[in-house]
Image (cartoon, rainbow, N blue to C red; front, side):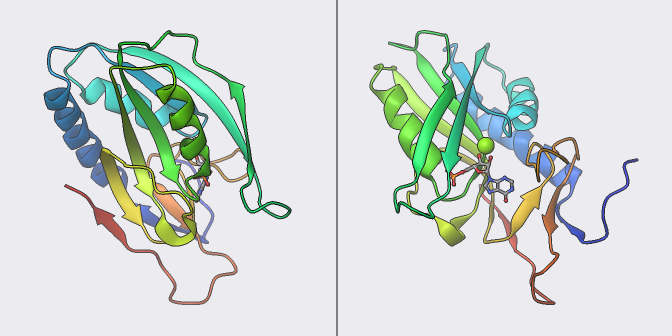
Length: 190
Ligand code: IMP
Ligand code: MG
């Protein structure tokens, strides 16, 4: 077992995540029955969620990855988005499922989903493990959502803090510096 800092408070235990990911996998497979979708993981955060999700899906898939950087909004209200690595699979006429770890401001996906839409996929769906509405500017339609966590900085199950903690099997809130008694509520979505 890894040693976890004391100020990391568990928000989503591993078994709760696994149950929800299996449910999402079943739902996606029903919706895409008879198809072979391209699953696009947004690096790096989505790698763990994607790995579990595709194994919970009954339809055969292709996997590709994109890496997108988003810059803070200190100077501009719109922020700045850069595609560091694009997918290499042509998606015209194909069913595409984008997999993201967490939707925060929504800028990253607002930008990249519209990029992908220009390539004329047969369908473009989004799966996100966590939606965090607190700072949201753009709210993409999340076809398959694991959990809503109202606020807070989260680590684990792909989510990092300064590059670390993606390997934790559960999701934790970093509570240092926050007022006592503050803890986000995690809601499951059917
Ligand atoms: P957005 O463009 O603000 O929606 O950025 C979303 C990206 O920021 C996610 O894909 C994560 O990589 C990162 N991010 C947002 N919130 C958190 C968090 O609480 N913990 C770790 N990474 C986060
Ligand atoms: Mg991410």
